[in-house]
Image 1 (spheres, one colour):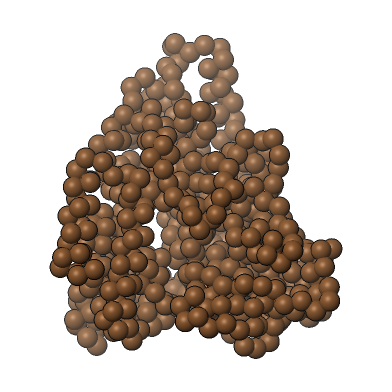
Image 2 (cartoon, one colour):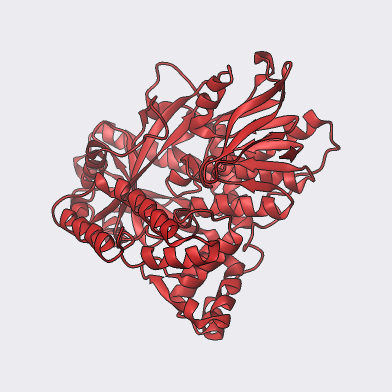
Length: 545
């Protein structure tokens, strides 16, 4: 296939972020991803670039790094982030409080107050102590008997888009991207790694790519790749499950406590709400991961303890991923370090192979810089400064005026607002497609503000090879309709752009709907089961799937 300076394995945030950094420094880069961008832990995270308040006692460095990088990410992708103020309620009234409870309140205020030291790094507001009356004015749905709360700030993000934008930036700087292409084996020359053998999952093409450095950022798949090549990547994978509710159930993020004492949260996120998260050891096949009804109930029970009405909301889906935490023996899963480590496999006879384990989404840019610095030294190249914290990601170059764009292109402002959130300044390029062909102004999904023009734009410019890739580019079939309104038409539009046959369009549509079914299966009950039957019947009958 060719020779490169570096081959990056994995299209998550560490892989795409490192590919971008290396390409910016003038290195020739090939990125291989076995599925689509952000298909693993990066796309299954909690939807936050957060400072890691829970890690201050054990991993102060993790908190500082994440808070600092949060500020940088806001600088390079301002359109993609939004502020989420959090409430941490106290659970009994002061007049009834014991000495231990009062000490707990004091300790909580001191703890959150310490977190305030990091808030300026990520443009967060300082914490505030709320009385019970103030708390209930903000969140009247909270259960009675709370004595107040303290506040802290975090930032929400669409993590799929973050990975996509890093990959597109890497490509703009000369990197080559190949999705749905798995690195099967390492090429070895004596005690050195010389490249990889790969296979394209869609075409069956096999080949070799050569490079003196291979960076393994395949996340939970790293141990499998290592074992296949006689190597080891020590890791303790942790399964995390989240739920999506069909509405913005609360005005603020709310920290909760699960039945076993683990910290959880409910937070508004874009058009809906997220409940998370579980944290359990998982040593099975990372390709065979699903949420269970027990995990769904565990999460709902934890939130219900503070928000008794939460079950009146509809759970539209459950989604999951594997944290690639560093291996430690004996600790509970939620007590494991969120620090990262870069492994050098030279001692195992694979000089030139580097792997990353651990870390956080919020720190991806700093982690990528650390890897890029190491690679440049290994290759003996002249040092060039990192610019990933200064150069905007695609669409982050300038602010977009939603009202002005809506008026100029004759598209409703709410649709433009969602488009600007996902694409930033590049939203105007999407809207020009509607100017050229008004039919592309067709609204496919009312929940997500998705138009046919955005589907066309993503197919042309954003490394789309399969219909399900559009779930991660523009949230196709992720909304409450389960794809009933949008999936079939989007499949036809994408098929026309990508040259699919009628049979391939139907196959891609069936695979897209199967992904949605897997996410809904654990949350279906009562009326939702009936709706699922109607949904499947509509696609089977009208769509002839």
